[in-house]
Image: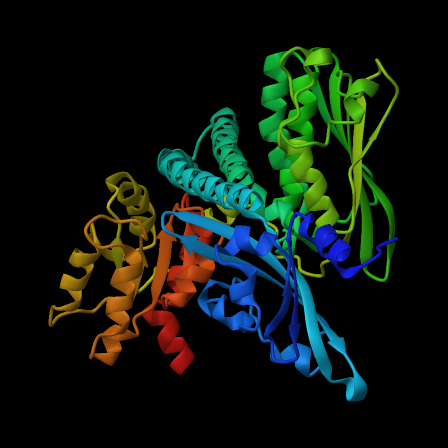
Length: 511
């Protein structure tokens, strides 16, 4: 039991933080001795002074309004304060609580001040490291996408011509492999986005049969080369035309198949698609990947969904990596989950269930290349292509020739602006690369939007880029761009975008 006031002071002085008390106006009435260590001024000199004499409002991280305590909007407030001393920075966590009296008016304030400098420095270092990592991933993905764009675009160009069935199958596999590699790059870049739950579903009509055919075409060759049998078994009641996020479904299935192939040295891998019933135009489908590999071992089950996990104790240098972790998170986004089954030594079985809406459309399910090869209307359009990579321009050339597109090129933003200075300017749309030398696409777009000639200032500008930052689409909108086209480009999507800005389309709208 504390016997007197001096004992109380002694006890408070031994607490490893500042404890204080002020009157109703914020003037200090009590401070323990730790105050002198933190703020290099004596307790005697500080008593009677107002707390605001020691706090610079610009150094408070949070939105701080002391009136909230007086008006009882809040009964307590916690703020983070930065104190700059010569070349050294100190961080404090300040806790303030109001004590109310008659009429619910504050009669005094009490609180503590804790030194959190070590914790804050670690936090800032982590933020800096994350920022560096994100910038590195964004830059590397940009560098990887440039040659990848050439690979997938060449495959698309070759698929425009007639080939033997074997050649056609090989070209489809090449195209699918490029698209799969692009998906892996996106996995890596967007992993933090998935971790924070910011990934959104993009649901639209798609053909489940076409999706499975693409998977069989690509994965069957890989399994065959390893000597593993691969089959797809589909329930007879499965609807073909459904509405959902086909890209994420493909990503999940590919991750499961890649994991199974990684762990399976011999035997088989089977992808089963089962119908669990259709009710009120909603189809509940189960997807199951079964293999004869080692991933089903009990030692791996506890950690197999962890990021960057490596099961060395069982499988030498074979690890599940990001694939299963990402798949699990993507399924949770769709109110589903990934389940592992089977006993030790009998392989693994991964399954998940998703509810899709059954689509009534019957025209939007032909593969992209088939649709592109069918009849099309020549495009009455003049396009300005802002692109510093000659290979990317070369990839556009055969498509533009086939679509009767007139176009000119510019290698940087300054060359783009020179076209706008010409009296005979007659472009209908600009395909604007974002990362160009001299003047990038963002700045060039902003300068175009500020032109005095309204017809030039309002020209449609479509971002055309391999840059893979997760906020890239939002950023292009902020700079006044009308659309977004990623590289490697999908020929069908590019045709649709150009068609929407063509003169023929504009004349039809007017008519």
